[in-house]
Length: 182
Image 1: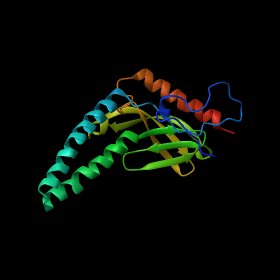
Image 2: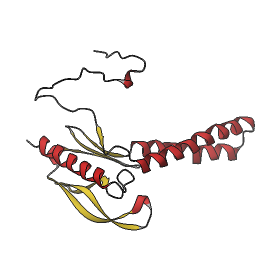
Image 3: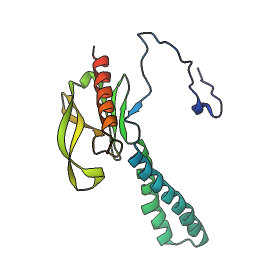
C-alpha cells in the first residue's frame, strides 16, 4: 500500500497520536542525544562555506574548463560534501530493533539481542576530535564479540558542557535497553 502524504507532510505526524497497545514497536530510528549546539554550529558554518564555494567552483569550471579546476572539484569539493553529509547523520540511533552507531566513516548496527550490558566507562578521549586528551565518560555496549563504543560521551559535540543532557541521555539509553530485554 502506498502512503500518500501532502507536499510538506514532514511538518506534522503521519499517524494519529494516541494510546498504543503493548505490541506496538518503535521502527523509526531515534537519535539520542539530539544534535547539540556545538555540533549544529560547526555543521551549519561548514555547510554555509561549502554551499558558497561549490557554485563559484562550478561557474569557474564552466567558464574556463581546465584540468586543475576539474581536479579541484572532484578531489576536494565532492569528498568534502560527502563527509559533511555524513557529519550531519553521525550519532547513536535507537529503535526496538537495536542500536545503530553512525560515525563519519562507518556505521555499526547491533541488535538488542546481542547487547549483554550497557555501561558507563571512564575513558581518556580526544576532545572534540582534536588530539588533546580529556577525561570523559562514555556509554559502551558489551556484546559477545567484545566491547562496542557509542558516540554518547561527555566530550562529544552534542553533550559538551551539558551535564544534564548527558545524564538524561545515559538514563534513556539504559531504560531502552532494559525495556527491550526479553
